[in-house]
Image 1 (cartoon, helix red, strand yellow):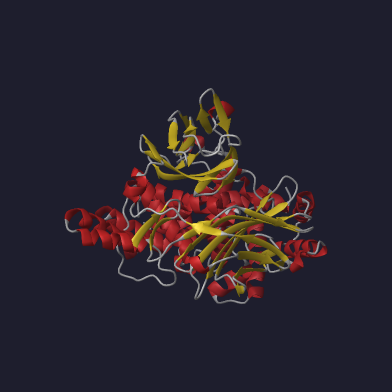
Image 2 (tube, rainbow over the protein chains, first blue to last red):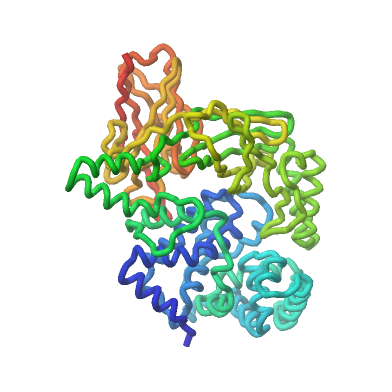
Length: 188
Length: 403
């Protein structure tokens, strides 16, 4: 069972009881993180980033009834929506800078898991995620911050109270370990 | 498979992770660590989101620091306005004095006039071109949006540097350094802070060396935001800055300038058309409402041209409304905005599109201000969710002549 913070439960209750106040609390707490995720994937005009952030919160509001705290946290749901919205928006805009954009070639399928639809890519994704989680802390968090949030090494070091050199070394080592554990996919 | 394939697969795996996986991976990440660049942007996002959902902002217990934005006052505004209709003329007068609504800007607290850009200004030298797009001055805070076209940057050269770095698996830090060297070689160091500091993307251009000059006095931006786009062949910077003007009000301002190094773009301000309540704006003669979508036009006459700013006051059930055909809805030319005259139409030129307004200039040489005009918007594009549709709402605005 997923660990639920008390805050998530209280926030959902507030959203159901007083939607306006609940949404303000939600945005006040999470808008920085969501903006960060969207900006890291869009790299576009501020207007596009802002619109995308708004879209994320609106989607969350429209899907409140589907939020299952046994499966994931509010933070997780919002982050997932932010990634998919930003990827969608990038595809629509398709006129931003080249730097880093190749990283957004990931698909953003919204399909739920159905055994008969498992593809090779799905299996590989699962294998990679399992391998990341098995790295343990803080390496899995460092990789997540670096690749999912696109956070610079310096910021990761500050957040984790480590030296930048240590973070860089950990990234290199963790990637090497991952490739070793995923040898069936023949990564070099 | 080579190293690049692993990076791609890794990112794909993260982007397609399930909610359980994302939650587990994010467990130790504290959202408070991340901040939106400035309070104004944060409040704007919150207000727009609530508006699009159809919720009213409620008063919060905490007092926000920094610029006191109107959103927190909107609740009080609503209470005061309802009071004016129920109780006394003095309450109504209080509301008029305290609050005003600037189309495209929102409800602001004010005991003085607010100002906007009089006309767009462009200025250029051999290296850069500055164009002022949007200005508001309210409560001594001047917000300006402008673009800086980096005329000597060939986007193909930038692309070559980045793609070569990717092909050779060069780090983001090294790529940023190469870009920094590239921009310095073109002499952009005197206009922008060029730095090898690597952020989320290898972008070496950090911020312009800009300043605001008002009546000869120089100011530095208290908020500065920068993003980039591409021109046909090069690179353009989109800049938004907020300056706090001490001891200056709009009516004292004779000349305003944005300066970057020795290039100056001068512009002037005009009083904003203000309404004392949103309801008043909506009931104004220059608004037109169709099925919940409400558009307002703000015309400025001159000898030979009519410049009209269109604001979307209400988007109705839609998330975006577009007059300028930028949503790719493929509105035919004959359904573009035009002035209707007996026996003929005058189509306009779209000169500015921002998140707040669309500006269209109509050539009215020979017509001048002696005739009443009707401006028609036969079709507009509207976005809802993923889809965009063309609406045959036929907005029209009657503009009275000045006789």
